[in-house]
Image (cartoon, rainbow, N blue to C red; front, side):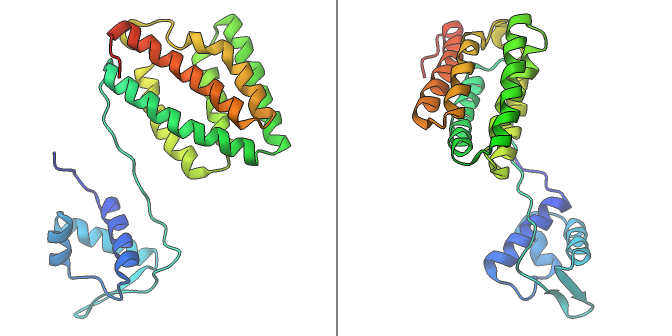
Length: 227
């Protein structure tokens, strides 16, 4: 399927081209249009943005010259398509989440401050109350896990997880009719929290893997999928 690109996408492609090819001057509009697979109108819009940002300068009759190649701000989009109630998509996202959150846990243990842990403690208290009352449990549980990424102090990891979590929120709305999906892992959040606070990486990762394995089991028990 052909990707529909906007001028914003082309701005970022051109910035990458400037950095990777160490360009002093951009190719002409026609060449860029053919190379990037977009119309010349979109190329012109993108070049206007580059000029506004002070990255390039266009000289009539001579071309577009690069003014700077360092400290460029390049936006990377993470786009993926999910199918609601797809067991494969749910399991794939669970494993992607596992990979990201294990990294966040390790980084949080290594770099979280006392203030970070104080904020994390509030999330834990709120989660325990929500587990008992069942009130707003999904959102409170989300805040607990998002806090782990926040105190990891890696903004790229946090941003990528947010994209993944957006997908998870869609798929985890009673996936495949499972009203109690995720409940089995809730009692282990306190021990996960305790291990993180104690900066015990091996124990925290062991408990976290158990929580994720319980989520996987919920889906596998319903669908019979074993992968």
